[in-house]
Image (cartoon, rainbow, N blue to C red):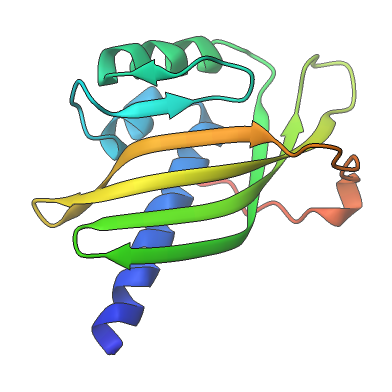
Length: 150
């Protein structure tokens, strides 16, 4: 039982690293989280399906080229592990800094992150985030963002 709980915590931590890499706009951190194969998949909100690490890497380069930034606070994080595969579902509370001189826009998406244990490490093999239909706008004071990792 302890092993199951410990493994859930490890997967939660890797999932959290994904969101910190996103916030930091760190291509190297993001790259370290993904399995580099031709069959991994990713769907960003409003994007078509991306297949294969090279295409996904290019998408992160494009997203990270936005100089204004993003904050992400995952909530209702649910982890399910079966063998060497882990499914993480959560809501993503987002603060999008579209312009450096304006207040951020707050929104919410729902996300599914799939991980595979490879060589003892959990690697991201699928990320899918979609807007929550008819979700009320999230107010700034309703979201607690984690401390930024330096």
